[in-house]
Image: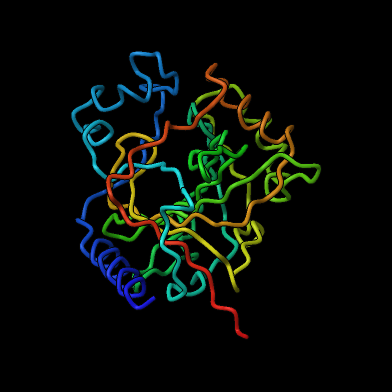
Length: 276
């Protein structure tokens, strides 16, 4: 037990050092998604993203790429990461059809996530179907990415996984009529008024989550991204997933990048200790 505790401590310290030493580079995803697609047989598909532009080279030769498989046998279980330190507030937002996904951008910059003393401002939500990250090799039906950035360009993403159920996702339900408005028109953007990111209903207290250092899952595939994947799975309706996919009308049917090699990275699973 003592040896295992030391290994976990070393893993945690190394991960903290990586996050604290992130280079100051702008890591934003591309807004024009017409230059790549998700067809694995295409010349501009995910296996060729790194050859399309020099600045996308990380998609091909990066060593800390995302998404990954969160294999239970691989993760280190810890309890010291604590609850997620989130301070979300309502803000005006816009919904945009980016060609392969739908992005909800928060305009005020008043919501943030704090990790290791660094404050990351909530910038946008977007959705992937099926999920990009897998649990023990299994893809879920949908994945929400909540993207946060610092003024210097460091990025932290919270991922939320969904499976199809009888209960629709209440947050997506608020966007239904707006999704219809921007459907089938790449680049279309609509002001959706004041939205509250807290309505995604993240359970702050006692949340179990995976934490690792990876990359953006779309070009330019920038690395040193702090990933937090919530272990709790949510329910979404099949109709809601269909609307998200049909709105972008990209003919691919999916917008999930293939799994990437772990390359000996540390993956932590934060599980609060039983108070008993």
